[in-house]
Each structure stands twice: as C-alpha cells, then as structure tokens.
Image (cartoon, rainbow, N blue to C red; front, top):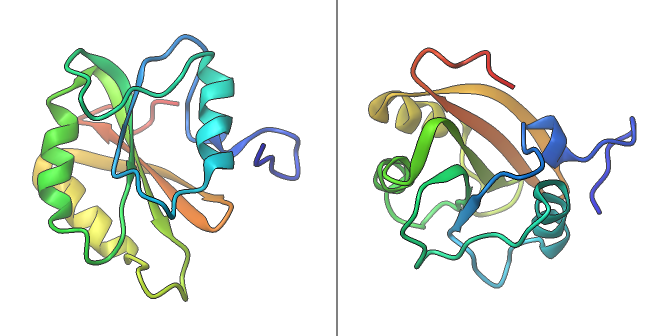
Length: 139
C-alpha cells in the first residue's frame, strides 16, 4: 500500500473513507495497482468499472496528456456523483512525458463547476481532489 511518512495512505489524505462507492475512469496498463488497492482497502470494496450506471460518492479519474478532453471527462464524472461527492484526478508526476499541468486541471474544474481542494503525491502520480460548488473545504 502507498503510505505516507505519517503512516496514512494518500487515499485517506484526499478524502476516501470506508463505505464509499468509487467509480474508476481512465484505467489503462500504466495505472499503479498499489494506488488502486489503497483506495479499495480504505473504502472496503472494489472500485466500480466504467460500465457502472449508479450514483457514486467519488470518482477516481486517471488522466494523462493526450487522453482527450479533461473537461469532457469531468462532466462525465459529475453525472455519477452524489451530493458532496468528489473527483480525484490522478496525473503522472512532473517530468513524465504525459504529465498534465495543475493549471489545466484547474481550468477543467472551473469550467464544470468543481474546485480543487487538495493535492497529494501518490507514488509516481499526483492526486488532485476536486469538489463540487461550495464544498471546497470538505474532507
């Protein structure tokens, strides 16, 4: 599991909690299975796949430069989110050829009515939590 220096996981740090239903979007061969397992361990169940059509508490969105339109994927994520639900965008770290700048994430978030509330290092990825409307301080 990907634990930080304090013993907590990055998944706890960005707000995943036990009992949440989490939808995963953007899975590909390059994702970090340890990060996925950390989320599953915290929530106590498997991640939902992109065919899921119910309401979720959070969306785990893997995103790389060249994946298409981040705004479109954020809009798609919103269609599944419960009130006070959130999106965690995971992008490759700085220096990786598919890294996405924080400004691009912020622009997409602003466009669809989300707000960046926290960021955490997650292995070779950077996790940015996006929350709905006035809930930017939620944890």
